[in-house]
Image 1 (cartoon, rainbow, N blue to C red):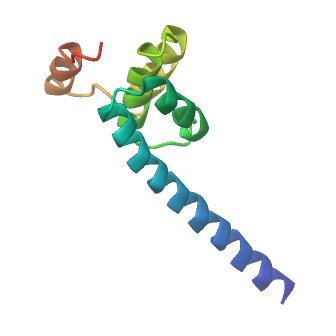
Image 2 (image 1 turned 60 degrees about the vertical axis):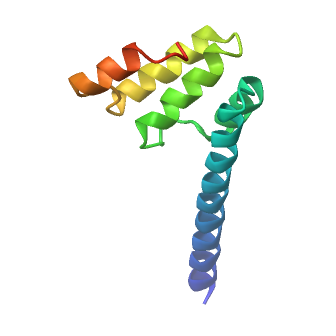
Image 3 (image 1 turned 180 degrees about the vertical axis):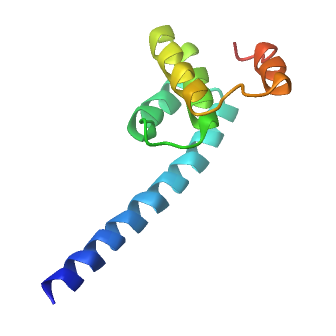
Length: 102
């Protein structure tokens, strides 16, 4: 019974964290659209870690960092994004090279 209870708690926290992540990405989209980069950067600091699987999260985190005068953090997040597959095609590299945010 104790194991079942612990499993339920584990899955509940997993669901809450996933939902929280999704909610934060919606907020981040609005902040970046409104050019509130420093506010976005604070949220990216909470959600970006090596476990993220989406390289674009790191890319947008880097955009918030560079526009919030944190270029070292931007480079770190870009590097992590590359490790996750960011820029893996020529078209993607062309797009990123010409992005107005950088």
